[in-house]
Image (tube, rainbow, N blue to C red; front, side):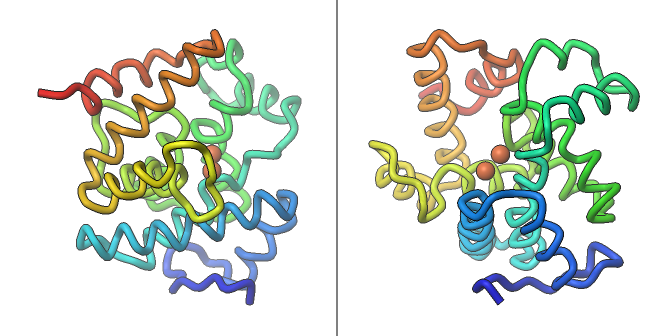
Length: 198
Ligand SMILES: [Fe+2]
Ligand SMILES: [Fe+2]
């Protein structure tokens, strides 16, 4: 099935059910991206002595909520105890931090490590676990990515995961600033932690 596989020990739903729900929640292009992130997460897990199936699952579902309607996100932010400052941002931020709400309720995944990795994948953070880093970096370098600099990003990340995080944050900040887009404060803190050359 779709060249995606992982041992699912994190949800009462079967792997086939998870795949079907994921597919129904997004367009074909996004689904392909999620498969790419899953495969790259597995590879990064292998390189960093992390549980490959857990990484593959986290990578697969990381964008589960990316195409949930903004109205639905706003409803959830207002009613489920989220920081109301989130209303000043958009889906680019929400699908990670608030996306976990949909993952918990619809995919029935409650593993804190997986949920934290998904929460952090859009903003990064000062504190990042190995799984946080794997999903964050895999999202950036999966085989479908073609932006200028992606080859170097892959080289850096496969050689050293922390350097991959630093490279990605510097690249992202550069992009946001060049386009005069809002920087989520936590992303700036993460940049100061992971991207500075000593
Ligand atoms: Fe995402
Ligand atoms: Fe993604």
